[in-house]
Length: 244
Image 1: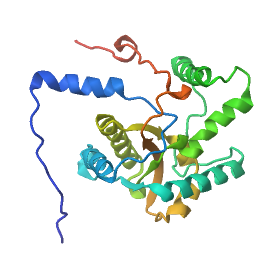
Image 2: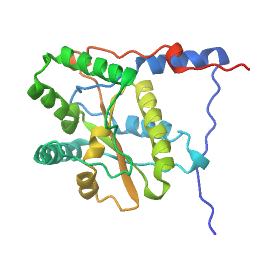
Image 3: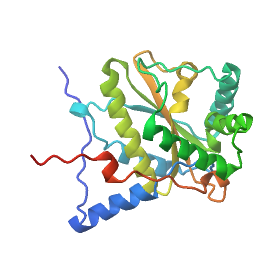
């Protein structure tokens, strides 16, 4: 039996009164970027991002995620091939997980989703009822919103939902770590709809499942698609207190 080797580091302490302020700043300043500059993130910065992300929590420290990161021509070839594949599917994409996206959204979830969608459409000038224009905007997912990099996140197939949840935690950590480094991101479940293509393109083995992609780089801050921010529900809508 061999013992797994791990790298363990001890973070320098931050004064207790400052910790929540640091977390709050990262959480409130993070947003989903939908238009990127073409300039690349330096390799050492990407490696720092990945090292920070690796500190994510996971069940029994299994760390089921693995990540493919594209740079330079690797991103451009993948972008072109992905867009061609998605266009050829005519919107009929499929996931490889046993669980599927919601068949519908109801109540407050439908309202939040609709509000977010119309914030984007209004920002980029898509009028209500213009399905061709909304489809063109949605298709930007498969052009990676112009980002110079994408991270494809896979999880161990045998770990099922547990692996997917742990890898989802990794994605959240990745987003905050990127924010701390001045890197813009957008997590994309849409790419999981192209999992069959992505599996073949990157020669991903059968014991891995494609969970999502994260396009990242530097934000095109003046682009209309980046001109709005989403809100969060108040605690009264999501927390139930029990004291007896």
